[in-house]
Length: 107
Image 1 (tube, helix red, strand yellow):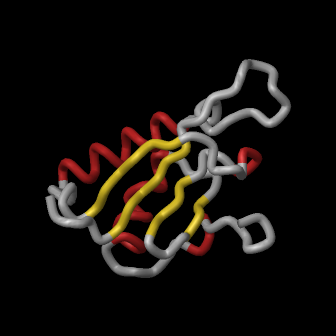
Image 2 (cartoon, rainbow, N blue to C red):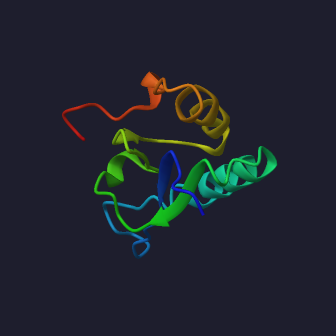
């Protein structure tokens, strides 16, 4: 497999019910990861882009969080509906989705 151009990390961390920080998993990161997987498959982008779920990315209050490398762009409060825009605008055209980016004071 060739090296992918970008790596998408979707936080899938879970905490016990009632934990004050909550978690990306409780906020719907599973549907975000599934939406990315479906879009990458439908568009045949698996060689160009890599998708991984990961443990805590450290910005729980902004979850579900998605981190894109090599740029190191962190997105917060991502929903499955945001996935197409992230793919089209950022991953394929190189322009991060500003309204979803986590502010510099957080990440």
